[in-house]
Length: 165
Image 1 (cartoon, rainbow, N blue to C red):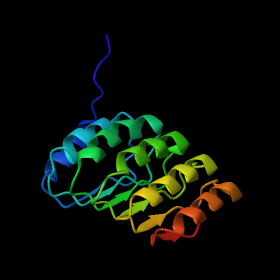
Image 2: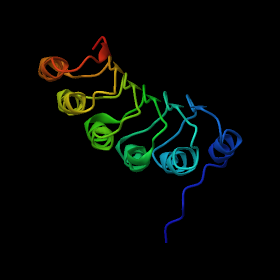
Image 3: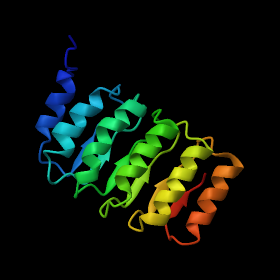
């Protein structure tokens, strides 16, 4: 029998900011299972949230699976900071799938997330399909020459600003 993951401190923090336009959860030692709480309580219930900062936590691929289900339906979030986590290539692919038709997110930070050329290719696909995203921070990843080439091709048809790779 599995028990549902609980993080009372996180739940309380989100509840106190339930109508805030910004939610800063930076450096909270959040893990993948905490993203289910963030998704259900912050992304689904807060209709005014425009900025979500999840930087410097321990969010990986599984955490992204929780988040993206709600990112698909979210219509208010404009800024998403996932820097300094471990989302990796699979996490990026989940994120890209969720954001392909998103028309509100304009700024995303994926700095230092163990993303390789495979993840860079996924991001390039996103940049070709989604013209609303106009600022992408992406340095301290492992994209290599192949990943840089994918992004360069995508940028030929997109005006997004990419902060140095």
